[in-house]
Image (cartoon, rainbow, N blue to C red; front, side, top):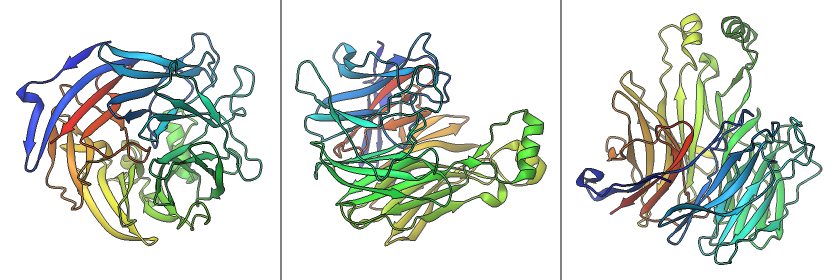
Length: 437
């Protein structure tokens, strides 16, 4: 494994009251494309990285050589040490289609969300068994204990889980979501970290809601999901197929959020629509969700007026395909405020952005800004949204796509940002560590 120590002055940036220092930038593992429609960051509403004290763990996705798709990958649990990254637990079975993801109690336990196939190898869209594996990181060797959720009715769970995952370390609770492949209903199960099922339920969005960000805070459940459906406009669908020759045509144009008052007792209220670009064949990507101490939900997303140059040139001349980075704040079931964090521009735009909560309670968005000078930046979000104050994060090579060790996954708020993602080499997952002072 390659480790790059970045301790020079070039790796330290001071901006007002916060100083940003890049501590590490290193390769973690290389991967082979499983050609199953998934990849290491496919479950982007969840996280494959966790910090417990001074220890950092990553859930690796490994493709099996010669294993027929779709469920042709397996998980490995890696830990960062002085000599690099080492395997501390793994399964011998290549039965996963999607990457596995992590939550933690921020003390001694990790919880790995797995979704193994229960069908013969090579089965596509076959039945899977979503469950958790609990690890005591102080045990030697690490040996997982299975935690089995339960669900309302008999949902059809397949290798396309569109899972959501969150933990409340203070309350000792975990929240799992998994989509029913036949009905598109998102089923959820709330568990105690010891494995007891506390409640079950369902969330139904106006259209199929996928790639959810999920939060569990002060007894309340939250879910943010993007609409993922086949192009509904026949004229547009026919034109795209004529021009590209591709039958696959899923669009992401509506964004939804739902919550409840007490997830152990109450169902989720009817979802509200956060954004909609149906009229101009646009594109929306849900970036992250954070719940403030007063219960406000901070929803970050990118939005393009038109989803592609092909559609713009034919149907919407004069509209833009460049995304803007936006923030919506929901209070008491209604949108309370909106902010444009980074406006669309011909010079640069934001590709990905994730929330980080510092030890002070301040919240930043770590963003990738694409353009002539690609870079990562921090944007102050809470207690005050200051979109004009953009703090450079001087990685040697910027991370174009990434996920963080998030507080939504039970990780403690702190002044270290841990991220896993891609920073230049498409077949390599890299780790970055940033210190805030």
